[in-house]
Picture (cartoon, each protein chain N blue to C red):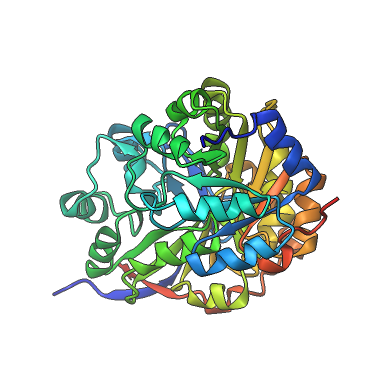
Amino acid sequence: MPPEIVPARLPAVLIASDGRHPVYTPPGLDAGVLIRDTDLAALVHRAGSDCPPLAVDIDSVAGLGSDDAAVDFVTSRLGIRVVLARRPQIAARVSDRGHLGLVHVFGYDSTGMARSLESHPRTPGVGSLLSPGLVILHLRPDELVDLPRPIVAYGLIDDVEDARACLELADAIVVRPAIAAKLAAQLEEFVPTGSGRREAIPETS
Amino acid sequence: MSYTPPDAEAFIARVAADPCCAAITAQENIGDALASRAPVVFILRGNGLALGQVVRRIHDAGKLVAVHVDLVRGLRADRSSIGWLGHAGVDAVISSHGQLMPAIRHEGMTAILRLLLVRRSQLDTAVAAINRSAPNIVEILPGVILPSVIGMMPPFEVPVLAGGFIRTQADVGAALSAGALGVTTSSQALWGYGAS
């Protein structure tokens, strides 16, 4: 009998880590760990630890390919349900396997972002990884609407106030552990209001 | 008659006096750019093999011209294309390839290194690339977040242009207040804004 598919939310916060040291999500914060800028051994080790990652930036893992076999490995063997990828077809493959693929959308200028979006698969299960994430605060409404959801703002969000502002527009943000800790410390007053469109992602239980 | 571009110091002074430069991505924007008070026209698209007439029109309008060698069609970003642009009368060349900066300077043009801001962890590497390639100017994208990011970057001495999502006078003011020499923008309403 196939495993039951249970919908789950993309957490509001992805805490970036290189996986070489354990990173735990702060209590009460809607968060998961994103592994990036690491190597294959560290990724495998962390996936088997007591603080396994929710997400991986597949192109930044030394030793790991960026192809279908790599997707199958991280999703099936390592149980990682969110995969960040530069290549749209890799993100689409993740989606095909019932997980969430996030394809990089480069927001350096308006022309470049539009061109970056041309190759977005625009299929359910493939969201947008807006890089650098801080630029989301400066997008026009029509540009924001054009980004396939869920939107994850990734990069240069290094201030709690910026993080909170980005969460008003994005479905999730990527931050360093220190910023996540500060967000958690402010949790009682922290009520993101713009995340109502956060999409469910399938979860295998 | 051969054309001699201004040296980098003069190019920088020109931008400092009139900080809003026109970034054009289509041939049809040229007329508006020429009619504006923008001191420099940045050509980000188009045919790099057919720039001669455009360059002459820009010079005839009393403006300087910078070409993004990585983005125009028909050219490979290498030393030979830099020589080609020099012969075409271009005043400055923009590239994300730091290794091209010496070649651009050697041709007598102003060398502009385009720096894409991605993540905090890469800022040190980016500044190291600036120091290694010694451009005359760094163009930072997306420039609209420069005020938030400049404090995270190690110090460097090269003048900065802010480009990308600069759309309002407030964006211009914030970038200049953060220390930018000027901005590049495709928003026509800003071309020449703040000119002295």
